[in-house]
Image: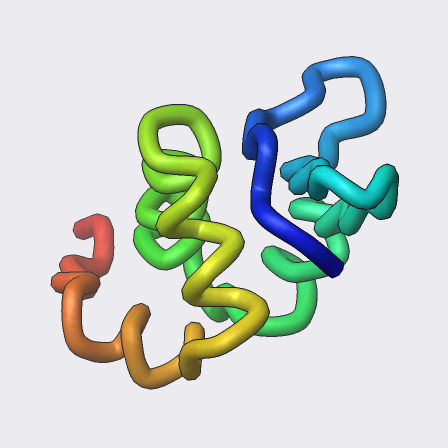
Length: 81
């Protein structure tokens, strides 16, 4: 892989797509990620926020980070009464 050209959420495929200068592409299936790491609606909401507002940061978290630890750190769980 060479330099990153673009990173965006594709509504048609429901994937965050990263395109590189050598023609390669990585597509992150956001539904599969949510099903794997999000345990409740609050964690799903946090992932959705990143997908729509910061797709590059989302891709970095999924590819290089620890999404489960991130979600435990930033998500405040408040059960409904």
